[in-house]
Length: 249
Length: 168
Image 1 (cartoon, each protein chain N blue to C red):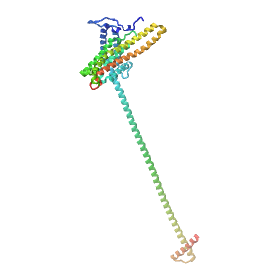
Image 2 (cartoon, rainbow over the protein chains, first blue to last red):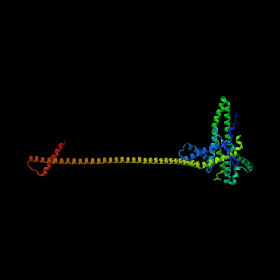
Image 3 (cartoon, rainbow over the protein chains, first blue to last red):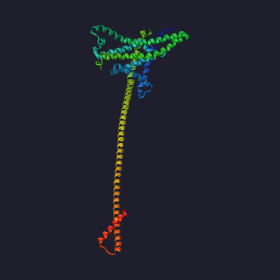
Image 4 (cartoon, rainbow over the protein chains, first blue to last red):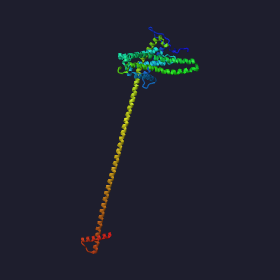
């Protein structure tokens, strides 16, 4: 193989810009973010202003996504969670469109950059911490001791729970990054095999490429869903300490 | 891996945060309120329509029951009227029949009485005339006059004999 399967993830500065010593150069990933922002804006703003009782195709699409996120929030956080709706919905749409745009050959999957997913996951986890301490004060540290833990287990449980809490943002970031990267690596490897295999044997990996491509579209949806779902769960945990409804509201 | 080349991190973070913030602001301001209110409006509309349909249905059912009850009452009433009419007709007929019978009886009785009367009168007339005739004949035969009582006595005897012979 002439080309590494990781080649599609390489970035090159297209327009070097520096802001007070901070490098904010334009590269392919940045342009893709702009594309995503434009697409989502056009879709959602048009759907939001259409306001037809019997929706058209575009309005239906937007409403399906909005309703999907709304019911996800309702299921995990209840009505009180709806104050996070704009944030969670924007997160879902941004990640979903980043994942999907990346499926177009020649484009770039923004979410295959660990730093991009990390920013989102730390934003979400940070928000859940802030919410937890704002709503429950110091009692929020109680998340480290699950309800029903016998007293003698507490010294053991606290380190374990701290680890599980720390794992949350990391796993959230790595899961999305790894899924997006792995899918594209797999596609790259298979396609490389198809090219180098020639007609006689190359059709097999090529057929796999097509199949995996379909799978990747599904994964793009599923990963956006998982990221958003876990966001809801983490924020919900901050809301309802130990799953009890009595503390929040 | 190219994703761990940290010299791209600063620009990626900067543009990601900026893009996300812009997208969040635009959607928050111009898209979500419209879509959410639309969804709620539609939900409300559907719920209202369903409620209304349910209401109409129960109303229709109620009306149907009402009409059925009315129909039943009307049928019963008609039956009652029919029965009363039949009874009245029967009674009238019976009354008429009775009256006719009584009337016929009366007419028959009257006629019988009249006939009886006439018959008796006729017999008496005949008797009187016969007596006179016989007297006249006897006077001629005896050539002497008898007094009235004698006449009667003889005439009666003669008549008695006559009727006896007649009967025989």
